[in-house]
Image (cartoon, rainbow, N blue to C red; front, side, top):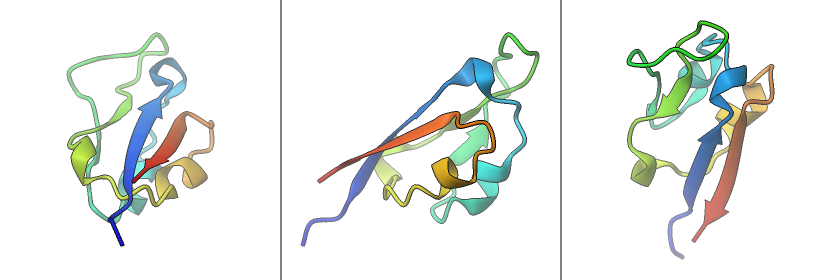
Length: 74
């Protein structure tokens, strides 16, 4: 059985940088992007190594602002 991979997208301008998605990622690839600030003045979350995403959807499920979308690919 092939490993599941994910493609994660963030609506960066809606992210408030709360970090909940960082805490629940089992492979620890979500981080705040300290190099950018969104239109609300926050450092948005992003994925550091997309190829390591296992498409668990934990980040999307915990996000209070519905910022994260996870697509599954085989």
